[in-house]
Image 1 (cartoon, rainbow, N blue to C red):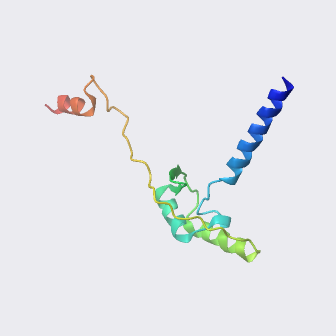
Image 2 (tube, one colour):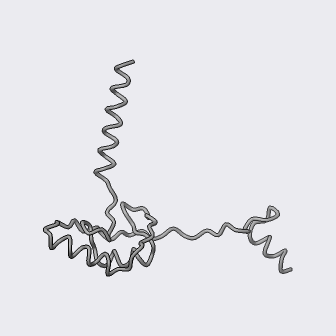
Image 3 (cartoon, rainbow, N blue to C red):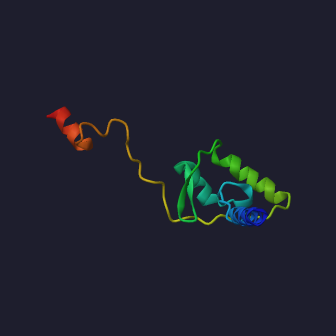
Length: 114
């Protein structure tokens, strides 16, 4: 039993280290600041990281993040600029009232108008 517990802890430690190594690079964080990507992320409410969309609501306007970046570098902080991703936000799929009577949206809409 002791051997399997130590193996489990070793695996958990490896997974934890891998997760930390692949932390998302938020383009608005001072240490990862990318001006163009940050502006786009604020407008789109998210950014592309590692080929996947990360939904994120920014609570401040762009100048806040820009100033934080300048303050960070003025204090000697090193920037690892986030790379602009190639994916976009996922398509919005309406869910409210779309499936009625087994005919989906079109059947419900047709029945309501016709």
